[in-house]
Image 1 (cartoon, one colour):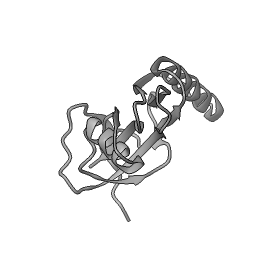
Image 2 (image 1 turned 90 degrees about the horizontal axis):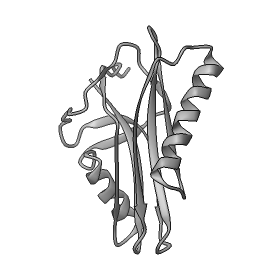
Image 3 (image 1 turned 60 degrees about the vertical axis):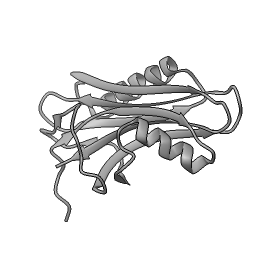
Length: 152
């Protein structure tokens, strides 16, 4: 059984690459998570977890991460990705991810609305949020990525 994470941060990065995979990798690097092994997780933030925006995770670590990304090879296209964490007063939180063909502001607005809906659906009070977002105007092959890495 894996331990429950105790720390997290929110991040976003966007970049170009010569292929879809290198565009994705370069966006990970811009988001400070390019040298980690991400294990994609769904959308619950453990109770009592601490926000650590400057956290350094050792390279090669297996890191539970909620993330969203978009890759495009359409020159001139605007792409964006965002993540948001919603906090409750005394229990777990909720993470939402979004990516699409839109602006950073549009992606942030979608995340805010998704967090509100997630808390309403659960009958919980939303007491705060942390959001990270990015947008990218594609030159050849671009990627926009946003993530919430969880750590121990």
